[in-house]
Image 1: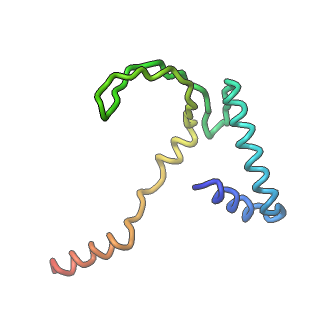
Image 2: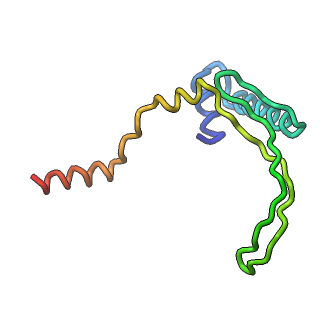
Image 3: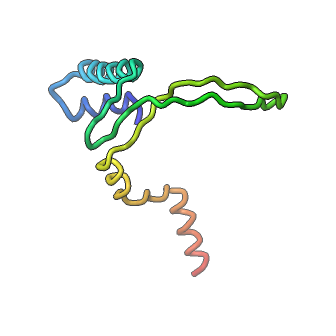
Length: 114
């Protein structure tokens, strides 16, 4: 799901809001979350998950062309930990249906075998 998909889905669900209002709301929420993480704060949305900042220590890497060792500096990276409700919802979903092409190939194999 992209940002545009999210805006469109929310605009459809809440008919009293215009598309522009929905777009503004999504932008405001994402900006607030980004600002909080940039300031080093933790974000917790119960049932969904939490966002935090993890420190990635410096390490030695290699230049793939020359094989030369390169020092990769320390950096801070955002981290998402899904909540229990989200993990259970994802785990409970049914397996995806095969696409139409795969289904057609399976049907052809079954006919050929019969």
